[in-house]
Amino acid sequence: MREFTFARAATVEDALDAPRGAVFLAGGTTVVDLMKLDVLRPRVVVDINALPLREITVDGTGLTVASGVRMGDLATHAEVVRAFPLVVEALLAGASQQIRNMASIGGNLLQRTRCGYFRDVCSACNRRAPGSGCAAIDGANRTHAVLGTSPSCVATHPSDLAVALTALDATVRVTGHGGEREVPLREFYRVPGDTPRIENVLGAGELIIAVHVPHPPAEARTTYVKVRDRASYEFALSSAAVVIEARDNVIAGARIAVGGVATVPWRLPAVEAALIGLPATPGGFGDVVARAADGASALTQNGYKIPLLEHTVLRAIEEVFAR
Ligand code: SF4
Image (cartoon, rainbow, N blue to C red; front, side, top):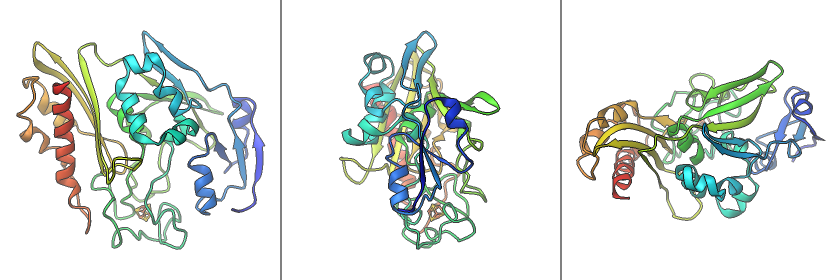
């Protein structure tokens, strides 16, 4: 690990005064990892654990989680377990107990891709070293994305929680020297395009301070399905977060986001629209989920992800009605 200056911020204002290029440290489960690998080389690391960002609130507007809350604390909060089971399912699927004890909600949303070439400083990687190329396109790309890709980068976004929050229409509260702003999570992440290094819409020095999740409709049922190489701690090959609202046994609303297959948490508007008006009973969704992979493009080793995505969405929809 390279030398760096370590500082502690006592207030949000202290954190915002950090020098340009400083890295914020909360749980450290991504940042420390990447510093050890020499992928991140900050000159200044600012510990933000003393900031007053540990509150979880459930009220009439929904769930508000401060960004410093640990995954484990959110997953076991009684009101969250009762009113936001989709959030809890994604948290439990997203990390081991040890990681959940350390990792913050803000850090979870900002975690970096698991692409092996990104984490290997000897490999070409436009996301880590702009202009160096993308070793994955002609390399080991079995776990890479089929949606939202570009010739510059095909890496998947790794967060399970972000997929669930995208289906729940969550917003992120961000603060910076220009003041606070709310960003829908759906607009927070950027597909790689020509600039894969820019992963989200955070401005220089801006900090996520909270996430707000509105209550799903009272009639809504939810589930999170994650498919991975092994049942214990592993990143998704494909996942689906489903929120389906049924009235009088007819589907009246649907929100579906998928992970493990796209460069950002990915909503499926065509599938959502096609579900409206169908009977709210298990079975008969085969034609609808065929739209899940609209626009998908496979690499040399990840073509299996297209049918896997369709089956993951199908399983999630059927699980919702089987509950
Ligand atoms: Fe880097 Fe993206 Fe290519 Fe992976 S897929 S090597 S992160 S540019």
